[in-house]
Image 1 (tube, rainbow over the protein chains, first blue to last red):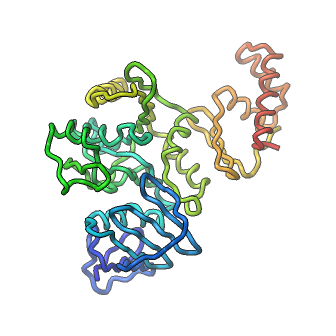
Image 2: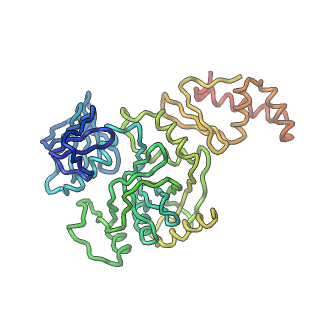
Image 3: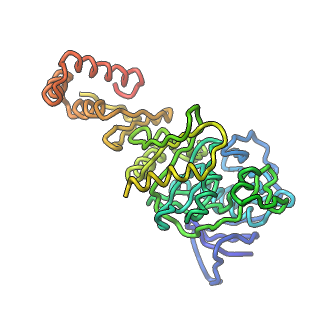
Length: 297
Length: 83
């Protein structure tokens, strides 16, 4: 058994997790969470949560299914993990810590956004978040920014705490083959870096410490000639961001999200970046983003 | 005086009022002008008083601003955000 401390819980786990282990044998906490490996047969209707990840709730049990990684079932003070065949042990732990546990134990202290987060190319202590619908180019842009002084904080799931810090989440950028090849100057793709769903894991620089949120950019494709950037204010900010919050209805209260969002957005810049609905070199988009920062100087 | 229902959460952001109806999770935002009107009405001023105030402050036609205020109130009532 491995022992860890996270989210105010002593974690006693059968699985090796990406956390610093507790060495002290006498370590005590009144909140104990057990993590055990077992077979899960939870057969209630699943609701889509984000991408292919889905969840289901019945009585006190919460089930989360991360295809190709693992199924997770929470009940009382235990999370049962049922890995898929040949899934990556590192990913099983990352999803458990940065996703499943965030919802189950700590859903009132973090807001989860769907997007990509990087450190700012102009200030390594600040974070920039890219959000947008599927295919908007979030991961591709994050990967491109990683070639311009930024480090990746997380991809897909972005945990933000109440103090406005963007925390390192699942630090794996997944790209479609064409983007992967464009970013890596035609590096060979292989089964080793495939996620099994048509995307490939990129080897990029990652940040392991939380950064203060400074900017959110909302990406979209539309029928325009080129690239348009507009700063959003007031209700526009909120309406644009709210669509990209990941929530489990019965766990995340709307009132919590409202209060949280209002506080969070008071001190950050939010931009809408629209671009033509066809391939556009991400370097050109980066140039436009850099102009925003220069204006702000 | 207008009063938002208890189920409505209100916050100021960049000089705008942002509202959320906790009964259905719907969000609404009021632009700077509408927010100013609401702030006066919440302070207990009547429609007439607010119209006069805005007339003096921005030289807006009283009749037109009175219509705008009444329309705003009707909108908020229709959305079940105020009594």
